[in-house]
Image (tube, rainbow, N blue to C red):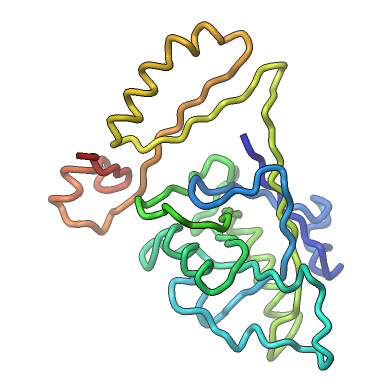
Length: 244
């Protein structure tokens, strides 16, 4: 298992916004893309007010350096894009791929709904997430708005530079047991066969491991009725294409 921790690295005025949590922001990692297990990633926060969802092409003018000598810290050369999730425009996967293509090192996606516990929200693969090589994490709507408000109001007429660190901490043990998560596409017969076949071994190892199978679905409320009737339940809220 992996716990994602975001920490505001600077400047101090932005870190003070999260002073009650020592600059830390709760985050949930996606079940697609590259997760750098046991590592940290620090970079410059990029927020494009003209493209808040990140579903359109990124604005290159935002990447121009503000200093004259071009002396920029190595970590600041990494671009960490902050976007607001808009499921009507694009999926988690689509916006993350867009950020990767534009040279982003990570996507921080703000949840479109206010959730008390962001860890209970799943950033699902929409079925096209293969090959993405950057991590994506989800933060709450309230935390995301705090960052946006600081960026917008701290620097009228421009964007104030800020940096953030993402730590992908491995949490393999709990109460002396090894934590095992198995993510699989719920419409994949081979994955379902694997879950069935391994169950007898999991029961025998129940004293030393905690096994948690996690089926992946994605929402498609705007798909046509024939697709939803075949691949979805709850009027497109949960979908999983059947593998032939």
